[in-house]
Amino acid sequence: MRSLLNILVKELLQLRRDPKILPILFIAPVVQLVVLGYAATTDVKRVELALCDLDRSAASRALVDAFTSSRYFQLTESVDSQPELDTLLQSGTARVALTIPAGFGGERTAGSPGRVQLLTDGSDATTGTIGLGYAQAVLGGVSSRAGVRPLVELRPLVLYNPDLLSRNFMVPATLALILLVMTMMLTAMALVRETEIGTMEQLLVTPIGPGELIAGKLLSYAVVGLVEVFSALPIVLFWFRVPLRGSFLTLILLTLPFMLCTLGLGLLVSTLAHTQQQAMMLAAFLFMLPQVYLSGFAFPIQNMPLVFQYATYLIPLRYYVTILRGVFLKGVGLGVLWPEALALVLLGSVILALARLRFRQRLA
Image 1 (cartoon, helix red, strand yellow):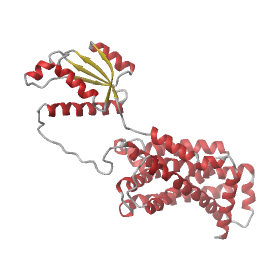
Image 2 (cartoon, helix red, strand yellow):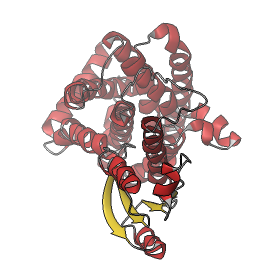
Image 3 (cartoon, helix red, strand yellow):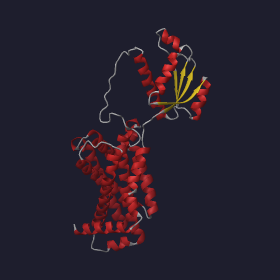
Image 4 (cartoon, one colour):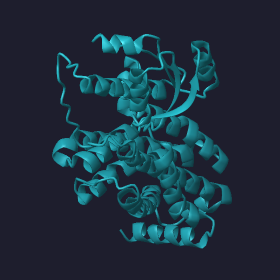
C-alpha cells in the first residue's frame, strides 16, 4: 500500500507540474460537455414549411393557421404551383411542403374530409420523419375541432422523460463518452510518455514491481476520472437540468467498474504504441469510434444488424450509458442495474488481464 501511495503521489505531482495538462484535465471536459450537450440533440423545432394553397378559402386559411400557430412549423415560403414546392425541397429551403388542392373548402362544407398533400424531405430522415409526425398531430387536432372523432382514442403517458427532451437522454451519455476519452487517453499517453523520455526503465529498477507500478498509475488516473465526474455533474444537474432521480452513491459506485475498463484499455493501448501520437491514433480508431457507434449513444442497438447487436455486448460504453440513463432518469439502483455492473466488472477484469500480460511481454 505504501508503494501504491508513493506512485499515486508521484503521478499527481507530475500532473500538477505540467501547466498544459491541467486545463485538458479539468476545463476541457466541462467545455466539451456543454458543447456536446447542446449539439448532440434529436429535438426538432420549427420545421421549415412551404405552402401551396390552391383553394384560398376560409377552410384552407384555417388549416394554414393551425400549422403556423403551432410551435412545430415555421412558414418559409408560399408559392402558387406545386413544381415550385419541389424546387424548395431540393434546395433545402423547406423540409415539409403542404399542398391544399382547389375544392378543399367545398369538401369541408359538404361534410366530407378534405384531402391535402404533404411532402417531406427524406434526405434528412430524422427531420423528415419528425416533421411528418408533427403534421399528423396538427391535422389530428384540426379534425377533432371539426367534430370528426377517431375510431380509437389514444391517451399516451410518457414515463421518466415526460417532455421527451433529448438532452435528458443525450447529456448523461455524453458524460460517459467524455469520461471514456479522458481516462483512456490519459492512461495510454502517460505510460507511453514514460517510455519516450526514458523514465520507465528508471521506475523498473526501483524496488517497485511491475504489478505495483501498473496499479499505482491506474489508481492515480482513476482519481483524476472521479474528479472529472464531480466537476461535470453540476453542469449536468444545474445547467442542463437533467434530473438525478437515483442515488448519487449508486452513480459513483457504478462508475468504478466502467473506469476499470477504460483504464485497462488505456494500458493496453500503451503496450501497442511506441509514441504518444501512435497512442492517440490507436485509441481513437481502434477503441473509441467502435464504442461510440455500437454503444447506443447515437444509434439504437435494436436497429442494428444481428451480428452487430451481438458485438455490442463487448462494448463497455453500452453498459455505462444504460447505467447513467437508468440512474438519472428512472431512479433505479443496483437491484436493477446489477447485470450491467457485472458485465463491466467481467469486461474490465479481462481487459486488465490482457493489458498486464501484454505489458509484461513488452518489458521482457
